[in-house]
Amino acid sequence: MSDTKKHATFAGGCFWCMVGPFQAEDGVLNVKSGYTGGHTENPTYEEVGTDQTGHVEAIQLTYDPQTVSYQRLLKIFWQNIDPTDAGGQFADRGESYETAIFYHDDEQKQLAEASRRDLQENGPFEDPIVTPIRPADTFYDAEAEHQDYHLKNPFHYQLYKKGSGREKFIKTYWSESK
Image (cartoon, rainbow, N blue to C red):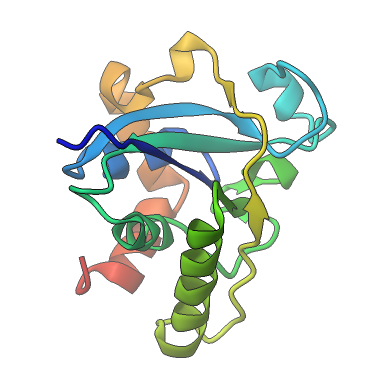
């Protein structure tokens, strides 16, 4: 592994559902659930859920770019969200569940913009891609009970993922292109 580690930050609705797909990827060293993009310092889960903090639920990855490319991380991100939904994700509605890519440098910004264009032009969606690309901001770790939720509470997590509509959506749009 290289000594060079990078960060990537994505908001894909409920952070519980975003951690596992990235943890499964070689080269992803760590995935944290948290909050970013808002104006409240050290927000709590309850505060973010009020849609008064400006924050979204997000994940921040530490990855080895010699093992996994940022383009691959973008593909994983797109294939785990509905990028046409500006009001939240699946059963989770509101500002705190909106999608976003938070870039950490100019290269990430350019790659994210290119991937969004490609998805709009060649992807499976007829509706416009509405996921914004924004500069990375302070990332606040979520509370301990929200870290690795899919591992700590697998039964509840699977019920949630299925019940929210996310699982069916992913199978409908991405089952052939993993």
